[in-house]
Length: 418
Image 1 (cartoon, rainbow, N blue to C red):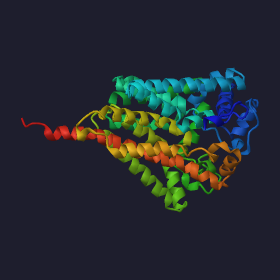
Image 2 (image 1 turned 45 degrees about the horizontal axis):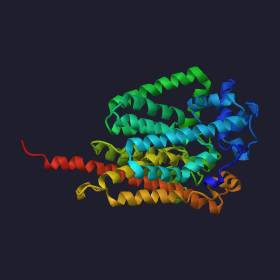
Image 3 (image 1 turned 90 degrees about the vertical axis):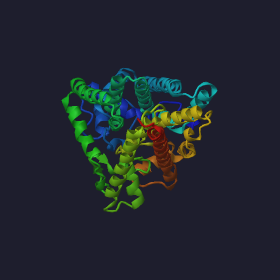
Image 4 (image 1 turned 120 degrees about the vertical axis):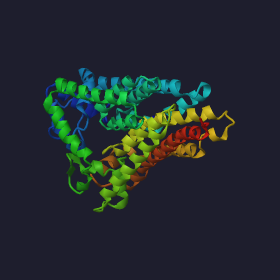
């Protein structure tokens, strides 16, 4: 997959909305009024021409993200594209290094796990699309590192930054509440309030209000209007796209978009979120960050629109499971051994990601047809391989977190009487 990465920034991929939206915001233009084609024209058409579906879609990036991206608009588009690519490469290097150093495993095993993570297909997809999930991965790793060092306030602020930049990590608040980490929760909420105030001060009130009007209906799960052109300002084809990893959209796809399928999707989403909350609340500690990774997976599943490259943020789960397996591999206590099902399902998640290539994002004609609502048959299987990988990651993280709760129950049973 890495061999197919673009050698030129000619197409720019998802770099287009980042650059044009941030440039428009810097020029005093509200990037959330109208479709992206209008914003692109008002910003001076800084990049190559837009396709039909690019012109019709709205800008879904948060104001905080566009403010963060504004320094890249000080460069010419081609230079900014490669600067963004190098920035992502540095973020990936830092994230992998900090993960291996924080969680392990040590020595040669750690280098082996790092190499496997570099070969993880969603990472290549992130570079292909010039996407932002590697930056988000580094933020998650920094938060996990702060939690491991009991710097709860810093962890709350870091996770709040992730929520302000990419919106869907707001679900990580569930992890802090489930762990009863009230200090981190308070810092998370306070940082979100301060960040919103800074966004209004730097971007203006109208762009922030326009984004809120666009995002609130999406969070309200208006997927029942999928037969129409738009749902909450979002093209219905985006929500029905086979590569959309939202759990509710997948359930509706399986059930055929019947009148009751939306309710079934919401019920299953609620069930998986409750299971994650119960499992995380039961653990005494989360030394390998598997409960943390479980909530990354849950946040991705519950996001109204989530793409296969979002699986980049699942990397801490693989590293945590590898580190836990290495730590218990030398023990003679059978009760402390890592459950075999965890390793099997985590391996299935990684292997399923290997089938995410092919037409998934690399054949522009198939991508255009699917966005337009005419899904190419060869597109569906690789797209659903990403959801299978995400589902296996959920099971692995849930079982790993549940296994972490076992020692707590065992200690309660063997506690001597007073």
